[in-house]
Image 1 (tube, rainbow, N blue to C red):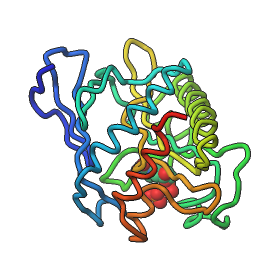
Image 2 (image 1 turned 90 degrees about the vertical axis):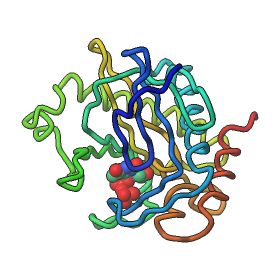
Image 3 (image 1 turned 180 degrees about the vertical axis):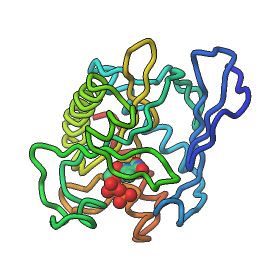
Length: 236
Ligand code: TYD
């Protein structure tokens, strides 16, 4: 598969065209950012760790009948994905209160949220990704009612599958973010599912096993990502 011109470069991934217009090459870079891009670093191996975990999670979802953009992984940091029309929403599922929920609402960190809470942000850097509600999503024509229902349904299915999988490995799935895209009227999970896009807490110690280690400067990010990747991917 030939890597052709760069189509898009985000904060941590670059997307290239390939010879096949239906497929893109997604490269996970070693860049890491937080706080709306105010904190930035480059950490060796981070791209390959997130590419590995993301591919692994997409594989689990596919096995559970959930459609994802993954076609195949081609090397340590790159995968081939379906070329989707991306929907500019960040669909966040929360099982335990943390992060912006705790910052913006009177709820204590660690409070279980049952049933899970879905929060949807508008992927729009110029407006700092404001939170949406269903009416705003329809008014701004970001998705139809059917599409929104389908994205929420898939997000909760992904939550069930990942929560169960991680739970068996002693990890609490606190929250995570999904992005979706469309192709031929079908909605697929796109983007990534990695330590950058989820909060994972060790069930026994409560220790963060995700990007919060970077956000708070609590420890060595790559050591943490490496350990959690092994815990996730290693055979049972
Ligand atoms: P959230 O607590 O809303 O934001 P932050 O972590 O920036 O305070 O995030 C909830 C989860 O969704 C968390 O695991 C990180 C992930 N997420 C992203 O990957 N990208 C984003 O742009 C946002 C807002 C969240």
